[in-house]
Amino acid sequence: MNSSFRTAAPNELAGALQDARDYTLSLFDCFAAAGFDAPEKVPILSILNPPLWELGHVAWFAEWYILREAQSSAPDAAQRTSLLTKGDDWFDSNTVPHRARWTLGLPSAGALKTYCHEVLDRALDKLTRAQNNDAALYPYRLALAHEDMHGEAFAYTLQTLGVMLPEQLAAHVIPSWAQGEIRFPGGTIELGSSTDTGFVFDNEKWAHPCYVQPFTMDSTLVSNAQFGEFIADGGYQKPQYWTDAGQAWLMQQEHSAPRGWYLDGKWWRCERFGKRTALISHEPVRHVSLFEAQAYCVWAGRRLPAEAEWEFAALSGHPALRWGDLWEWTCSPFEPYPEFSADAYREYSEPWFATHQAVRGASFATRPRMRSAKYRNFYLPERNDMFVGFRTCSL
Image 1 (tube, rainbow, N blue to C red):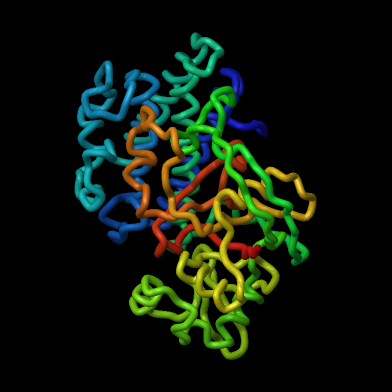
Image 2: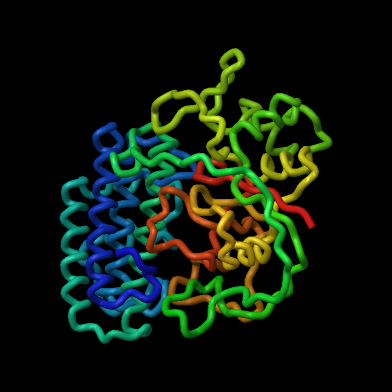
């Protein structure tokens, strides 16, 4: 499926749902092969879930909205019981605290794989009788997006735990893109998504005019070489480049360099999925927090783009603009648009407004069907385990 999941017809959704489940299972097998097949074997970290729990949760979510016909994420919203006796007690992320996911007494990996197959088979059968309209296909598109997002989270977790990637991701190389700047004239754009574009995430509701002043933005992401200049100039040691929040974050870090970087004489090295390798100078710097991106921008006399500027540039179709290799920090806090209202998955956006930062674009681990210039991602400012980088901007 090369087109967007947002407008996928039933036959396209069927193939995409099968593809997503196959991908989820292949990533779980990477964890299992490395010995992380049970929660007690996985370190308790705030940035990840035990892979076995996440495997069951993905299938449970699809069962909740498709098979059990829940109209919301309220605990009593499902119209029928789960295929698993304790499914809700194990896998409802709204009622199961994060730390408790290591001590739930989950079924074996084999049993949860069987559950995954059963849920998918029943969902695909039900899909054959679904009408081809946005309302009828909404739960299928939602479940697909949810599984694709967890697939990318699985890839983050592989990096965090030092586990080798499956071949289809390991073979990906980010090419060298010409550095440069693009001048955009500014103007009024429709920020957000309209009612006639198929599936819409609730934080995109609804399209509204937004005036963007003329601005200049990097054509591609800040590279390892460019960020290395910031480090070599003492960027991590000079407080004038850091906000108060950035200073507080920096005091808690073990190394004054991006996550996974190592100093080895004059050479920079990094650790990628359990393998230490030379850092490629032209590749975009990754695994940097918002604070690090902000500090670099101050050092360079630049700033991060606002969400509206990023979307203006992405929608411009400018041939020199490159995005999609890594997620990109913006200078915009993650906040609701004027006509926001929560959708069936009530906890998708609303709990994270004001505390998280808006992130735009996509990464090499984002499934192509998920990519959109309208897609608003969001993370805590201190997070640096994702595949995230940044570009700079100025007026």
